[in-house]
Amino acid sequence: MGVIFDTSFLIEAERRESEISQFVENREEEVFGISVITVAELLDGVHRADSTKRRLKRSAYVEKVIALFTTYNFEVSTARIYAELWSDLSRKGIQIGAHDLIIGSTALSLGFSVATYNLRHFERIEGLKIETFNLQE
Image (cartoon, rainbow, N blue to C red):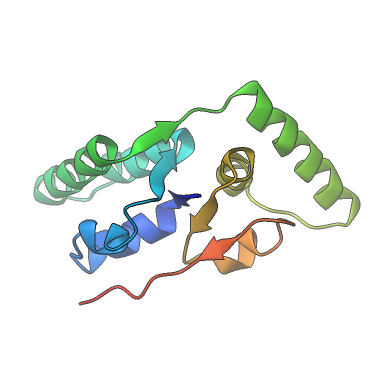
């Protein structure tokens, strides 16, 4: 089993200045990773920083995350899951942002759960296991 960290989870960890190692503590048997779209979202946050100081701090954090965790690409197997979910949700009149749907599809394709604070979107993805962690301040 493994866990894909959603962008919302990583941003909250950065805001609280929590050490990422806390999240994986006592879970040595599990794999932890991020979706390639999470990398893009985090880098977008770097570029949107309103000061050089904040940009440098965010950049250092994002590079740490990229170095610590395996990045999972959007593969054809993930695209198949994504397309099925997108179609099913659309038929039901449910909308989820494309990025969150990619992250959820990535987790499903790997048999992983998603660690997130954006329950509203991820709860709509049938079969997806969701985790939240208590971040220590």
